[in-house]
Image (tube, rainbow, N blue to C red):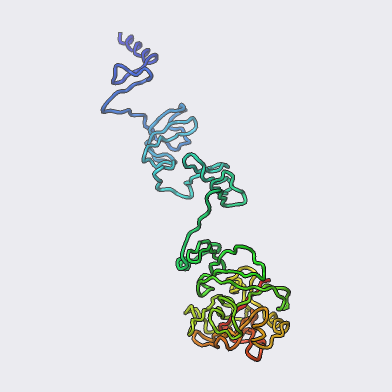
Length: 409
Protein backbone atom coordinates (compact mmCIF):
# COMPACT_ATOMS: atom_id res chain seq x y z
CA UNK A 1 0.00 0.00 0.00
CA UNK A 2 2.84 2.44 0.90
CA UNK A 3 4.55 1.68 -2.39
CA UNK A 4 1.38 2.50 -4.26
CA UNK A 5 1.08 5.91 -2.56
CA UNK A 6 4.68 6.69 -3.33
CA UNK A 7 4.15 5.92 -6.99
CA UNK A 8 1.10 8.17 -7.08
CA UNK A 9 3.07 11.01 -5.47
CA UNK A 10 5.80 10.51 -8.02
CA UNK A 11 3.36 10.81 -10.87
CA UNK A 12 2.06 14.10 -9.48
CA UNK A 13 5.66 15.44 -9.38
CA UNK A 14 6.07 14.74 -13.06
CA UNK A 15 2.73 15.83 -14.42
CA UNK A 16 1.50 18.73 -12.22
CA UNK A 17 2.58 21.75 -10.14
CA UNK A 18 3.97 21.09 -6.70
CA UNK A 19 3.12 23.29 -3.75
CA UNK A 20 5.16 23.56 -0.62
CA UNK A 21 3.32 25.38 2.12
CA UNK A 22 0.29 25.84 -0.13
CA UNK A 23 -2.54 23.66 -1.39
CA UNK A 24 -3.05 25.86 -4.47
CA UNK A 25 0.24 26.17 -6.37
CA UNK A 26 0.23 28.76 -9.15
CA UNK A 27 -0.68 27.28 -12.49
CA UNK A 28 2.30 28.85 -14.19
CA UNK A 29 4.80 27.44 -11.67
CA UNK A 30 6.36 23.99 -11.61
CA UNK A 31 7.12 24.54 -7.94
CA UNK A 32 5.36 27.07 -5.68
CA UNK A 33 6.84 27.56 -2.24
CA UNK A 34 4.98 29.65 0.30
CA UNK A 35 6.35 30.74 3.69
CA UNK A 36 6.51 33.82 5.90
CA UNK A 37 9.57 32.96 7.94
CA UNK A 38 11.68 30.56 5.90
CA UNK A 39 13.61 30.59 2.65
CA UNK A 40 15.08 28.31 0.03
CA UNK A 41 18.48 26.84 0.79
CA UNK A 42 20.29 26.10 -2.46
CA UNK A 43 23.11 23.60 -2.80
CA UNK A 44 26.35 24.98 -1.39
CA UNK A 45 29.55 24.25 -3.26
CA UNK A 46 33.13 25.50 -3.23
CA UNK A 47 33.98 26.77 -6.71
CA UNK A 48 37.61 27.43 -7.64
CA UNK A 49 37.20 29.68 -10.71
CA UNK A 50 34.50 30.89 -13.05
CA UNK A 51 36.00 28.81 -15.86
CA UNK A 52 36.11 25.56 -13.86
CA UNK A 53 32.87 23.55 -13.61
CA UNK A 54 34.05 21.41 -10.66
CA UNK A 55 33.08 20.41 -8.11
CA UNK A 56 29.85 20.14 -10.11
CA UNK A 57 30.11 17.43 -12.72
CA UNK A 58 28.77 18.35 -16.19
CA UNK A 59 26.53 21.17 -14.92
CA UNK A 60 23.43 21.90 -16.96
CA UNK A 61 23.08 25.33 -18.50
CA UNK A 62 21.37 27.70 -16.02
CA UNK A 63 22.22 25.46 -13.05
CA UNK A 64 22.26 27.63 -9.90
CA UNK A 65 24.47 27.09 -6.86
CA UNK A 66 25.67 29.07 -3.88
CA UNK A 67 29.45 29.37 -3.87
CA UNK A 68 31.03 29.31 -0.42
CA UNK A 69 34.66 29.84 -1.43
CA UNK A 70 36.90 32.80 -2.12
CA UNK A 71 39.31 31.52 -4.74
CA UNK A 72 40.62 32.55 -8.15
CA UNK A 73 38.08 34.99 -9.52
CA UNK A 74 35.10 33.79 -7.44
CA UNK A 75 33.73 35.05 -4.14
CA UNK A 76 30.84 33.79 -2.00
CA UNK A 77 27.46 34.30 -3.65
CA UNK A 78 24.94 32.95 -6.15
CA UNK A 79 26.34 31.64 -9.45
CA UNK A 80 24.71 30.16 -12.54
CA UNK A 81 26.32 28.06 -15.28
CA UNK A 82 26.14 29.66 -18.76
CA UNK A 83 27.27 26.52 -20.48
CA UNK A 84 30.91 27.54 -20.42
CA UNK A 85 31.52 29.62 -17.25
CA UNK A 86 29.99 30.43 -13.88
CA UNK A 87 28.37 33.89 -13.72
CA UNK A 88 27.82 35.60 -10.40
CA UNK A 89 24.43 37.06 -9.58
CA UNK A 90 25.18 40.60 -8.33
CA UNK A 91 23.03 42.41 -5.80
CA UNK A 92 23.11 46.06 -4.81
CA UNK A 93 26.27 46.78 -2.88
CA UNK A 94 28.18 43.81 -4.31
CA UNK A 95 31.72 44.58 -5.43
CA UNK A 96 32.16 42.00 -8.16
CA UNK A 97 33.90 42.55 -11.47
CA UNK A 98 31.11 44.79 -12.78
CA UNK A 99 31.32 48.58 -12.54
CA UNK A 100 28.81 50.00 -10.08
CA UNK A 101 26.68 53.10 -10.68
CA UNK A 102 27.55 54.33 -7.19
CA UNK A 103 31.29 53.91 -7.66
CA UNK A 104 33.88 51.20 -7.12
CA UNK A 105 36.51 50.57 -4.47
CA UNK A 106 39.57 48.38 -4.40
CA UNK A 107 40.26 48.68 -8.12
CA UNK A 108 43.67 47.99 -9.63
CA UNK A 109 44.46 50.11 -12.73
CA UNK A 110 46.73 47.38 -14.07
CA UNK A 111 43.79 44.93 -14.07
CA UNK A 112 40.52 46.87 -13.94
CA UNK A 113 39.45 49.09 -16.82
CA UNK A 114 36.40 50.73 -18.32
CA UNK A 115 36.44 49.93 -22.02
CA UNK A 116 36.60 47.18 -24.62
CA UNK A 117 38.77 44.11 -25.03
CA UNK A 118 38.35 43.95 -28.79
CA UNK A 119 38.88 46.33 -31.72
CA UNK A 120 35.65 48.21 -31.07
CA UNK A 121 35.08 51.84 -30.11
CA UNK A 122 33.90 52.90 -26.66
CA UNK A 123 30.81 55.14 -26.79
CA UNK A 124 29.50 57.45 -24.05
CA UNK A 125 25.87 58.58 -24.26
CA UNK A 126 23.54 60.95 -22.43
CA UNK A 127 19.80 61.20 -23.08
CA UNK A 128 20.30 58.24 -25.43
CA UNK A 129 22.48 60.34 -27.74
CA UNK A 130 26.16 59.74 -28.40
CA UNK A 131 28.34 62.46 -26.84
CA UNK A 132 31.84 60.98 -26.95
CA UNK A 133 33.60 58.12 -28.70
CA UNK A 134 37.04 56.64 -28.18
CA UNK A 135 38.03 54.80 -31.34
CA UNK A 136 39.89 51.50 -31.25
CA UNK A 137 43.01 53.38 -32.39
CA UNK A 138 42.79 55.84 -29.47
CA UNK A 139 41.34 58.95 -31.16
CA UNK A 140 38.79 60.73 -28.99
CA UNK A 141 35.77 62.29 -30.68
CA UNK A 142 33.38 64.70 -28.99
CA UNK A 143 30.05 65.02 -30.79
CA UNK A 144 31.37 62.96 -33.67
CA UNK A 145 31.08 59.23 -34.33
CA UNK A 146 34.11 59.34 -36.64
CA UNK A 147 37.04 61.08 -34.93
CA UNK A 148 39.77 61.87 -37.44
CA UNK A 149 42.54 59.29 -37.24
CA UNK A 150 45.19 62.02 -37.42
CA UNK A 151 43.79 63.75 -34.33
CA UNK A 152 44.14 62.70 -30.71
CA UNK A 153 41.07 64.85 -29.93
CA UNK A 154 38.44 65.76 -32.54
CA UNK A 155 35.74 68.14 -31.31
CA UNK A 156 32.80 68.75 -33.64
CA UNK A 157 30.10 71.39 -33.26
CA UNK A 158 28.31 74.10 -35.21
CA UNK A 159 26.89 75.85 -32.13
CA UNK A 160 29.53 75.51 -29.38
CA UNK A 161 33.28 76.14 -29.12
CA UNK A 162 36.30 75.14 -27.03
CA UNK A 163 36.64 77.18 -23.80
CA UNK A 164 40.11 77.11 -22.20
CA UNK A 165 40.76 77.98 -18.55
CA UNK A 166 40.41 81.73 -17.86
CA UNK A 167 42.97 83.29 -15.52
CA UNK A 168 44.40 86.68 -14.58
CA UNK A 169 48.04 87.55 -15.30
CA UNK A 170 48.89 87.01 -11.64
CA UNK A 171 47.23 83.59 -11.62
CA UNK A 172 49.04 82.60 -14.81
CA UNK A 173 52.38 83.70 -13.36
CA UNK A 174 51.69 81.52 -10.30
CA UNK A 175 51.25 78.31 -12.34
CA UNK A 176 53.74 75.81 -10.95
CA UNK A 177 56.12 74.24 -13.50
CA UNK A 178 54.14 75.07 -16.67
CA UNK A 179 54.76 72.68 -19.55
CA UNK A 180 55.51 73.74 -23.14
CA UNK A 181 52.29 74.11 -25.13
CA UNK A 182 50.10 75.02 -22.14
CA UNK A 183 47.17 77.22 -23.25
CA UNK A 184 45.11 79.62 -21.13
CA UNK A 185 42.97 82.71 -21.70
CA UNK A 186 44.41 85.82 -20.01
CA UNK A 187 41.47 87.81 -18.64
CA UNK A 188 43.61 90.91 -18.06
CA UNK A 189 45.00 91.04 -21.59
CA UNK A 190 41.80 89.72 -23.21
CA UNK A 191 43.62 87.15 -25.33
CA UNK A 192 44.69 83.50 -25.35
CA UNK A 193 48.33 82.79 -24.50
CA UNK A 194 50.53 79.70 -24.78
CA UNK A 195 53.65 78.68 -22.86
CA UNK A 196 56.87 78.22 -24.83
CA UNK A 197 60.57 78.66 -24.08
CA UNK A 198 60.07 79.96 -20.58
CA UNK A 199 57.25 82.47 -21.07
CA UNK A 200 53.60 82.86 -22.01
CA UNK A 201 53.08 84.28 -25.50
CA UNK A 202 49.97 85.55 -27.26
CA UNK A 203 48.73 83.79 -30.37
CA UNK A 204 49.41 85.66 -33.60
CA UNK A 205 46.20 86.44 -35.43
CA UNK A 206 47.85 86.29 -38.86
CA UNK A 207 51.30 85.73 -40.39
CA UNK A 208 53.44 88.86 -40.25
CA UNK A 209 53.99 90.81 -43.44
CA UNK A 210 57.20 92.69 -42.78
CA UNK A 211 56.63 96.41 -42.93
CA UNK A 212 53.36 96.11 -41.03
CA UNK A 213 53.05 96.54 -37.25
CA UNK A 214 53.33 93.44 -35.08
CA UNK A 215 51.42 93.30 -31.78
CA UNK A 216 52.77 90.96 -29.11
CA UNK A 217 51.66 90.33 -25.55
CA UNK A 218 54.58 89.79 -23.16
CA UNK A 219 53.75 87.99 -19.91
CA UNK A 220 55.90 88.46 -16.82
CA UNK A 221 58.16 85.50 -16.17
CA UNK A 222 61.66 84.24 -16.78
CA UNK A 223 62.07 86.50 -19.87
CA UNK A 224 59.70 89.48 -19.69
CA UNK A 225 60.15 91.59 -16.52
CA UNK A 226 56.55 92.83 -16.63
CA UNK A 227 53.32 92.01 -18.45
CA UNK A 228 52.31 94.31 -21.29
CA UNK A 229 51.18 94.35 -24.90
CA UNK A 230 53.53 96.02 -27.39
CA UNK A 231 53.03 96.95 -31.02
CA UNK A 232 56.39 96.77 -32.79
CA UNK A 233 57.19 98.53 -36.04
CA UNK A 234 58.95 96.35 -38.63
CA UNK A 235 61.03 97.02 -41.73
CA UNK A 236 62.41 94.75 -44.45
CA UNK A 237 66.01 95.73 -45.21
CA UNK A 238 69.36 94.29 -46.30
CA UNK A 239 71.33 96.87 -44.32
CA UNK A 240 72.82 94.09 -42.17
CA UNK A 241 74.59 92.64 -45.19
CA UNK A 242 73.10 89.14 -44.94
CA UNK A 243 70.22 89.54 -47.35
CA UNK A 244 66.77 91.02 -46.81
CA UNK A 245 65.75 90.58 -43.19
CA UNK A 246 62.79 91.77 -41.16
CA UNK A 247 63.90 94.03 -38.27
CA UNK A 248 61.90 95.58 -35.47
CA UNK A 249 62.27 99.37 -35.43
CA UNK A 250 62.32 99.84 -31.65
CA UNK A 251 64.16 98.16 -28.81
CA UNK A 252 62.75 94.90 -27.51
CA UNK A 253 60.33 95.70 -24.71
CA UNK A 254 59.93 99.37 -25.75
CA UNK A 255 56.38 100.71 -25.90
CA UNK A 256 57.21 102.62 -29.09
CA UNK A 257 60.01 104.07 -31.20
CA UNK A 258 62.14 106.79 -29.68
CA UNK A 259 60.99 110.30 -30.52
CA UNK A 260 64.50 111.79 -30.82
CA UNK A 261 68.06 110.36 -30.96
CA UNK A 262 68.59 111.11 -27.25
CA UNK A 263 65.16 110.03 -25.99
CA UNK A 264 65.86 108.99 -22.39
CA UNK A 265 62.36 107.84 -21.44
CA UNK A 266 61.75 104.29 -20.25
CA UNK A 267 58.89 103.58 -22.73
CA UNK A 268 61.33 104.30 -25.59
CA UNK A 269 64.36 102.54 -24.10
CA UNK A 270 62.69 99.18 -23.61
CA UNK A 271 64.21 96.39 -21.55
CA UNK A 272 67.83 95.39 -20.87
CA UNK A 273 69.59 92.02 -20.95
CA UNK A 274 72.84 90.60 -19.65
CA UNK A 275 74.73 88.66 -22.33
CA UNK A 276 73.31 85.20 -23.10
CA UNK A 277 70.68 85.48 -20.39
CA UNK A 278 66.96 85.15 -21.07
CA UNK A 279 65.78 87.34 -18.19
CA UNK A 280 65.05 90.93 -19.17
CA UNK A 281 65.13 93.94 -16.84
CA UNK A 282 62.96 97.03 -16.73
CA UNK A 283 64.40 100.41 -15.78
CA UNK A 284 62.34 101.73 -12.87
CA UNK A 285 64.29 105.00 -12.68
CA UNK A 286 66.86 104.20 -10.02
CA UNK A 287 67.17 100.43 -10.22
CA UNK A 288 66.08 97.43 -12.27
CA UNK A 289 63.29 94.93 -11.91
CA UNK A 290 63.08 92.02 -11.25
CA UNK A 291 65.33 92.09 -8.22
CA UNK A 292 67.42 89.07 -7.31
CA UNK A 293 68.06 87.65 -10.78
CA UNK A 294 71.14 89.75 -11.58
CA UNK A 295 74.45 87.93 -12.14
CA UNK A 296 77.42 90.00 -11.01
CA UNK A 297 79.83 88.05 -13.22
CA UNK A 298 79.38 85.96 -16.36
CA UNK A 299 82.23 83.74 -17.50
CA UNK A 300 81.50 81.51 -20.48
CA UNK A 301 82.86 81.33 -24.01
CA UNK A 302 79.51 80.76 -25.75
CA UNK A 303 77.81 83.11 -28.20
CA UNK A 304 74.22 84.02 -27.33
CA UNK A 305 72.34 80.69 -27.59
CA UNK A 306 68.91 80.19 -29.13
CA UNK A 307 67.51 78.85 -25.86
CA UNK A 308 68.37 82.17 -24.15
CA UNK A 309 67.67 84.50 -27.08
CA UNK A 310 64.96 86.95 -25.90
CA UNK A 311 64.05 87.71 -29.52
CA UNK A 312 62.87 84.16 -30.21
CA UNK A 313 61.50 83.75 -26.69
CA UNK A 314 59.37 86.89 -26.84
CA UNK A 315 58.65 87.35 -30.56
CA UNK A 316 58.57 83.75 -31.77
CA UNK A 317 60.50 81.27 -33.86
CA UNK A 318 62.81 82.77 -36.47
CA UNK A 319 63.54 85.96 -34.54
CA UNK A 320 67.07 86.46 -33.19
CA UNK A 321 69.71 88.96 -32.13
CA UNK A 322 72.00 90.43 -34.83
CA UNK A 323 75.56 89.12 -35.06
CA UNK A 324 78.61 91.33 -34.72
CA UNK A 325 79.10 91.13 -38.50
CA UNK A 326 75.57 92.35 -39.14
CA UNK A 327 76.08 95.40 -36.90
CA UNK A 328 79.37 96.18 -38.68
CA UNK A 329 77.58 95.91 -42.03
CA UNK A 330 74.82 98.15 -40.70
CA UNK A 331 77.35 100.89 -39.85
CA UNK A 332 79.11 100.53 -43.21
CA UNK A 333 76.08 100.12 -45.48
CA UNK A 334 74.14 102.85 -43.77
CA UNK A 335 77.07 105.30 -43.48
CA UNK A 336 76.33 105.59 -39.76
CA UNK A 337 78.78 107.93 -37.99
CA UNK A 338 76.91 108.87 -34.80
CA UNK A 339 73.64 108.35 -32.92
CA UNK A 340 71.84 110.93 -35.06
CA UNK A 341 72.64 108.94 -38.20
CA UNK A 342 71.50 105.79 -36.38
CA UNK A 343 68.20 107.40 -35.45
CA UNK A 344 67.63 108.56 -39.02
CA UNK A 345 68.32 105.08 -40.40
CA UNK A 346 65.64 102.49 -41.19
CA UNK A 347 66.23 100.86 -37.79
CA UNK A 348 65.61 104.07 -35.75
CA UNK A 349 68.32 103.31 -33.16
CA UNK A 350 68.64 105.78 -30.29
CA UNK A 351 70.75 106.38 -27.20
CA UNK A 352 69.24 103.91 -24.71
CA UNK A 353 72.22 103.63 -22.40
CA UNK A 354 73.03 100.51 -20.35
CA UNK A 355 73.36 99.17 -16.78
CA UNK A 356 76.64 98.02 -15.23
CA UNK A 357 74.90 96.81 -12.07
CA UNK A 358 71.41 96.91 -10.60
CA UNK A 359 72.01 100.45 -9.34
CA UNK A 360 74.63 101.88 -11.71
CA UNK A 361 73.99 102.89 -15.31
CA UNK A 362 75.20 104.85 -18.27
CA UNK A 363 72.11 107.00 -18.56
CA UNK A 364 69.72 106.70 -21.45
CA UNK A 365 70.16 109.69 -23.73
CA UNK A 366 73.95 109.60 -23.54
CA UNK A 367 74.73 106.89 -26.07
CA UNK A 368 73.81 103.73 -27.95
CA UNK A 369 74.98 100.46 -26.37
CA UNK A 370 73.22 97.50 -27.97
CA UNK A 371 74.19 93.83 -27.86
CA UNK A 372 75.21 91.57 -30.71
CA UNK A 373 74.95 87.79 -30.33
CA UNK A 374 78.72 87.35 -30.71
CA UNK A 375 81.06 86.50 -27.86
CA UNK A 376 84.62 87.84 -27.67
CA UNK A 377 85.99 85.97 -24.66
CA UNK A 378 84.77 84.25 -21.52
CA UNK A 379 83.71 87.55 -19.92
CA UNK A 380 83.42 90.01 -22.87
CA UNK A 381 81.04 90.19 -25.84
CA UNK A 382 80.60 92.49 -28.83
CA UNK A 383 78.13 95.35 -28.94
CA UNK A 384 77.37 98.35 -31.14
CA UNK A 385 78.43 101.63 -29.57
CA UNK A 386 77.49 105.15 -30.59
CA UNK A 387 77.42 108.68 -29.22
CA UNK A 388 77.20 112.22 -30.55
CA UNK A 389 80.39 111.85 -32.65
CA UNK A 390 81.08 108.14 -33.02
CA UNK A 391 79.48 104.87 -34.13
CA UNK A 392 81.74 101.84 -33.76
CA UNK A 393 82.21 98.18 -32.99
CA UNK A 394 82.84 97.72 -29.26
CA UNK A 395 82.94 95.08 -26.55
CA UNK A 396 82.42 95.00 -22.81
CA UNK A 397 81.58 92.82 -19.83
CA UNK A 398 78.90 90.19 -20.44
CA UNK A 399 77.47 91.01 -17.02
CA UNK A 400 76.38 94.48 -18.23
CA UNK A 401 72.71 94.79 -19.20
CA UNK A 402 72.06 96.38 -22.58
CA UNK A 403 69.32 96.98 -25.11
CA UNK A 404 68.39 94.39 -27.72
CA UNK A 405 67.17 94.66 -31.31
CA UNK A 406 65.76 91.71 -33.21
CA UNK A 407 65.66 90.51 -36.79
CA UNK A 408 63.99 87.57 -38.48
CA UNK A 409 65.55 85.34 -41.14
